Image 1 (tube, protein in one colour):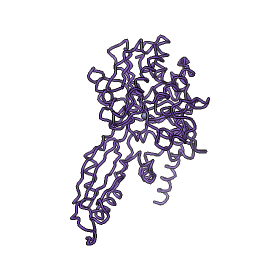
Image 2 (cartoon, protein in one colour; image 1 turned 90 degrees about the vertical axis):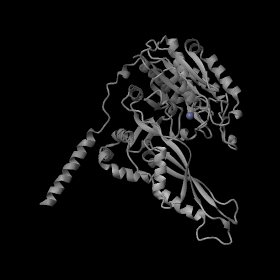
Image 3 (cartoon, helix red, strand yellow; image 1 turned 135 degrees about the vertical axis):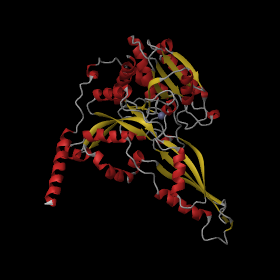
Length: 489
Ligand SMILES: [Zn+2]
């Protein structure tokens, strides 16, 4: 009898799931943006200006003495020359060494403004890789399919897109109700530079009493995803948060001496156990709300049999987390990651180490703080005779909401541009300038509206960085519409 009841319950649940999966699809939208007028854009001018922007070698360096400031000066002159309406209509302030803030005064000062961020700097070409480039990295070659060069993806494409859009909006006679700030940092690529331009811009805005409705920066893109028979869409990942990066040194002390009379374990031997403890005690995996939303959005676009699983993410959470922890890129989305990266012992092969130490890099999830990391180390390591020293690091960012005006507009704009586009919140693994704006804004989104495949994304910071021309029209339309929709009320 009991067996029949259990069987009945199971069949009932399966039936519910089967029906649920049928209706587990994206809502049909009656998007008001479908009715948005065509935006006037000038793709040829964009291409020319991006090519020329790439020719200016705005390479940043941690050591400001090693920066060629003349290139930044040239870049500022280039902007002035190419965007006369911006320079006539907006006020420009230079901040720190070469950061710029343009302010486009809104007609309603009672409303919070918005900021569009783009960094001017690029990374250098790694030594010994120049000959691997198909086209010179600082010539901005346009071969009719791609615009090539350093910064073509990270992120002069974005910067020029924003400048073009504002220039065009002014030409159209558009007047924003909210104030628009264009914030162009000069050393984003130099993580933790002491003269961080973005930090100083945010500080400047704070001093001016500015509070922003939204910040848009780099961080996500629109990635075509095609898994045969399962999923065929363009995934627009909007970064709502970024992970922290925290470094600790862990040391073990010992007597030292000559290696001819060693103890059973040297300091390094003891340290081996420490490493094992750390690696075997990973941070707990959790599924934050935005990861759940990411899976739900993707799940809705999967084909029917797959939806039998994806419509039950809430139920299958423990199993999903378990599987994800086995796949490093997936694991990085759901937990603080631990990487033992450096080690040192004695300075010579016949000397016992008096001190042996390792450096561990933790990529923290939002909500996990620097003190939490230290507590985790002390709990995980059985050897209590260790020294734990905080070296350097930054906390994970806050998590921006997915029900703000800006997020909704980004979603609507992307999804109305192409029915294949799917917008979902995303966790950014690296750092962005946007991180510095938390004291003036709660709604911070890291997203570049360019459709680019993974191979092209992987060229960022590497060889053959290039932007496909096919991604340009939608991106320019996105920037114009985003600025308009965000600033008309
Ligand atoms: Zn960048």
